[in-house]
Structures are given as structure tokens and as C-alpha cells.
Amino acid sequence: MGEASVEMYSFVLQEIISSNVLPICKGDNFKFHAAGREDIDVRMLGSGRPFLVEIQNARHIPTSADIEEIVDKINNSKDKFVTVRSLNLVGSQAWTLMREGEAEKQKQYAALVWISLPLNDKDLQTISSLKDMLRLAFY
Image 1 (cartoon, one colour):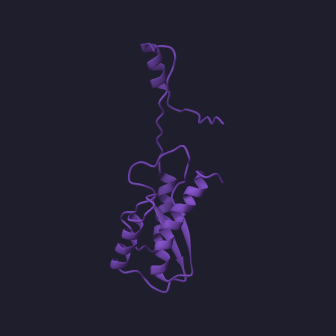
Image 2: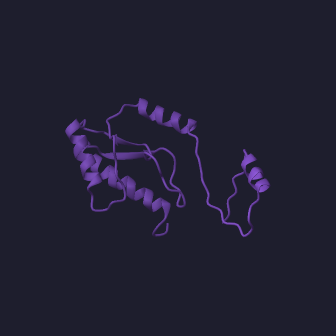
Image 3: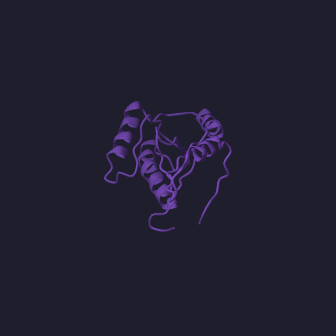
């Protein structure tokens, strides 16, 4: 993993969130589950990425005040890598909903392309008529 690797960034996010949840819940360990995945060349826009923090052997169920404290600690941490909103205590049904949402989610991508030749109306019509495009990866 390089200094700016996706794996390292994802690990830091997990640690920031979980290190603030685990002590409040007085658990032994945690598992972090995020919807989707991190890509080094893709920005997360919109309302953010849903996640679950599963606390193993929790000995305290957080109150509303505890949850507010967790949100404040995460959002006001010295490293501004992550912010959270709408943090809630959820049951096992949330895991099912997150997986269902992932299967139904449609992704949209936009690309900015520069070309050396001017486009005419026929070129624009041809480009606009493309519906099913192949995903190409260049490395």
C-alpha cells in the first residue's frame, strides 16, 4: 500500500469512525461494513456512502446523547478525513437493506474528453445515440 492508497484511506476512515464508537459501546472489537467500494480515481458525491459498524460483545447500548457525542467527536476530529451524519442505532434488518440497496443501485459516470478535431452535427448525433457502452480500463 502506498502512502495515498485507497486501502490506507479506507483503513483510516474505519479507524476514525470505529475508534469513537467502540469505547462508548464498551465492546471487544468491531467490524466495519461499507456500501460500495473506494476507488482512487472516483469521488463520492451526493449524500455519502452508507456504512455499518458492528460492535462485537457490546456491553452498553448507546443513548441518543451517546450517538450525538460520537458524531461530534468524528466531525470535529483534528484529521478532517471523514464526517458523518444521520448516525443511528440499527438492528440486523439494516444489513439486509444495505445489501438490497447495493444490488439495485445504478451508477452514473461522467467524463470530460478533449479531442483535436472539431465535431460536426453528425458526430454529435452518433455520440448521443450510444446507449450500451463497454467499460474499458487503461493501465
